[in-house]
Image (cartoon, rainbow, N blue to C red):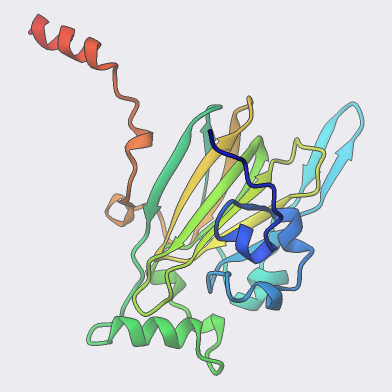
Length: 229
């Protein structure tokens, strides 16, 4: 037998291990989480307006305003994705742009760790950043920093869709070089809306530990089908 650990870990510890919620992260001073936060990852707070008998309405971002405005960030392509209940997506990763002749570690550290660097200097048009939010369903987001020169950090947090009555509504901005995965929580499907700084390119869709995405047939079915050939 094993005993469940009911001890309460700090938010920073849960963020990099068992997981936290977007509501907790938005309500906490980022400086208190700096040792666990992946540089370049941003949460974009969203307010959902509920209309009785009709539905709900929620904005995501306005060009030049809020966090995206401060970062000089704006997507070039928008898309949607539906994930069925009980499914997961990822891990996958988009390669960062490294100038020819530049040391990858030094380049990344200059962009994300140097006090003198401006977010507007990031080469958004040459690498894929993802900005996403969910209009339906609850999901767990998992992020892993795999960039050269950066500390390998893990972030796990729950995001609620607009159809939820909770307070964990936010968009997520994910830099290239940060592996990401999404796991649908609960019994409902999840619908995601996401924008990217570059148009879709299959060559920029690196897959890592993605066997969960491949709905393989049961082994006995495969064996039977192979016999039929």
